[in-house]
Image (cartoon, rainbow, N blue to C red):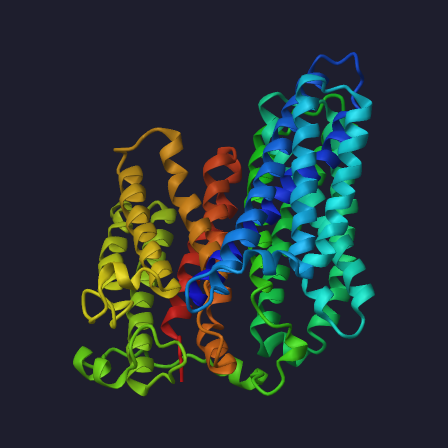
Length: 531
């Protein structure tokens, strides 16, 4: 139950960050970008009305996600032996009071934004929305790691506010800009957002460096702890978003400086969509950090760089698995999260990863062959995903149905099993949709986007994937390969998205990026080691 609650907590916190971005980032976008438009422009009130609607929706989602965490999730975990939930006792804690304030502020912002939908040009309304948005950002300092620190609490809380402000203004503004593209904005408005985005990035990077030093403390901790690796994951995804943002900036600059320059919409819109998608993944990765102890606090269980590097050294894959009877005899019951894993369990898991690696690497190679245009038959590579899904369904959780004694529904309460089975469903959807698209059965453009979206979702799930944290070092070393695979899956998804959405002459680079990432995921699986 505790593990499932931890997984749900990460998802709800991630949803809360996305909602905060839509709400607070939307206010910044409306005030800085849209209200700067000339009142004589017919598009200005309509654009402000759409922005206020998304702000209201984001604020309601923020209030709802925090309410579920405060009144349901945490009291559920803290229930006593009689099943009584200590809701009132939890609400009066510092975290509970801060959450209540945040919920009230979010509901107030939703009410103000709803009024602004009817009167989008009301200056007083936007001033009130801006004030509430600032209070929401300040409130976030009491819901982060910083408030629990014994030293440097004030600077860390302040850095948290500025870092989160930059992130939500940037990502929230991108969400609103992507939504505004159905009614194209004039060049000066897009240029204003470009400068707003650069200022927000500065807020993300500057305080983010301070927070990383405060919570990580050393290069060894950056490499040898789960917290540190998630920070590296955020940096890698941030680099991808900055690359897309730089391309957008160059397109906008050329557009605004030359009256004869064509509209950059055919290129700009797909880049913005990919920025939003990767940005949402960054927010989910940030939420997953809240479930991990800061790296500076993990000393005895910290892995060395050499131990981490050893997990990526190429070795011959394991092509033989222990019999399931032998594994079940050695392993503890599936709900025993405190047990020490046995050699049979490590061997079973390594075999699973290596066989999966053969599937994935094979598909990646076929995808590369298809891109050359000289092997039309290679377009059937998605069918291999169905074989991979069947293998995963049977082998992922040997102590649960169909191989083990734990029943199907009983095992669904465990987050590992739940996530594994969700991944199987995603893999099946991968295979069916992409194969039907590539053979032409699903010819509508929307169907082609299913595969990249599922790739991106699968990568995000891998980055939020959680195991028991009782044996920090062993669990970290077993999971350290998840981060690079998650990043590659996200790049794979949005690379394929760009290949489909960009003009034909610009599709080459994204196509090679996503198919190469496919091969790299297979290669990482082939060298996966747990011992």
